[in-house]
Amino acid sequence: MMTTNKDTHSEIEELLPWHAAGTLSRRDSQRVEEALARDPELARRYALVREELGETILLNETLGAPSARAMETLFAKIDAEPARKPAVSLNLGARVAEFFAGLTPRTLAWSATAAAIAILLQAGLIATIVLKSQSSGGYETASAPSTDPGVGAFTIIRFAPQASSDDITKFLEANKLQIAAGPTAGGLYKVRVAVTGLPKEELARIVKKLQQDKVVGFIATTE
Amino acid sequence: MQTTPDDALIARIADGDRLAMQVLFARHHVRVYRFVLRLVRNEATAEDLISEVFLDIWRQAGKFEGRSAVSTWMLSIARFKALSTLRKRPDEELDEEIAEQIEDHADDPEVTLAKKDKAAVLRQCLSKLSAEHREIVDLVYYHEKSVEEVAGIVGIPEATVKTRMFYARKKLSELLKEQGIDRGWP
Image 1 (tube, each protein chain N blue to C red):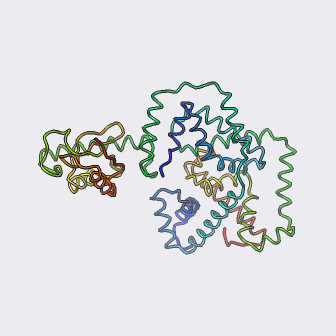
Image 2 (cartoon, rainbow over the protein chains, first blue to last red):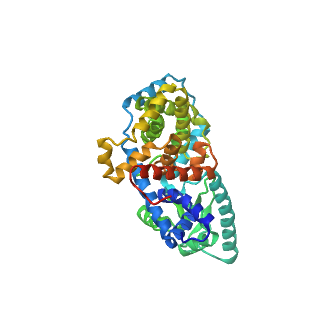
């Protein structure tokens, strides 16, 4: 074994199956990658893990699928259950969650707590950005600033949870954007992209361009 | 293409949405079935169990708090149901299952043929692992569950998850060695 620290090695070795399956945290994954790069014996063992992974998948895939009977039995039982009264508040939450989660990458589907904390932190940071920009004449709208916050072309944006205040400031400045309102409970901001209304196609083009920025978690046009 | 996330389906199921239940079932029933089948080793029993698992999901959807992925929650329910069934199974049946595993070690012509294919032998040895070891190998490799998620499903500490997986792999190497394949590890 090339690695001198035996404990570290066994700890890393224990992580190999999860590394192969791609279910390690980025930090652990990096640790494993570094260990693999410097330890040929560990790399050889990793090749064994990958073999096991491939054959386990194949083995499971050859197990077949249940017959239609399973579904028929299930829905017969469900139909026999007493009717349920929909919970309105839960339903609304579900619709909102469904709408936004459907539009964002799967990797951004963070836990509710983490998202709430991120949104709160971000809200604070963005409030600071807005205050700073107001006092120092920072970023402005695409053309001459409008005094009426309701006039112009708008998008709604949810910033990526990992975006820092610096990232957001640079993003707003670079694209001459102005936060008009927000955040809402879902961490959404109404952002003005122009002081006058824009044709739909032009607004869609801008949204597409902004979407490419890593700072943006979600973006859509709005009235 | 956008798909409805599992947790949104669960929220709709909590409202009694039968269609959401159909979508969730279509999305997950094969994997849940395979997980259960590897534990109970009987297709009819596994089919009965997945109906029960999804019926539980229908009934419990309103209590789902989203602390874990829906698939993790489903596998936890499936595991509980499978183990409960195994406990009820008569001893003779379990003895037969053990006997089948012992007989598997014998070199019949089929096995001899399989030996020529290392991958096939590896799959055969994966099937010979104990239920505890099979379960953890499947959860990690096939169901793509993290250390934390496996700990939640199986109900053991994360450190034990890692150790159990290590010993499952070690056992696999021993079984391979018995079949004439020395992997040089452990």
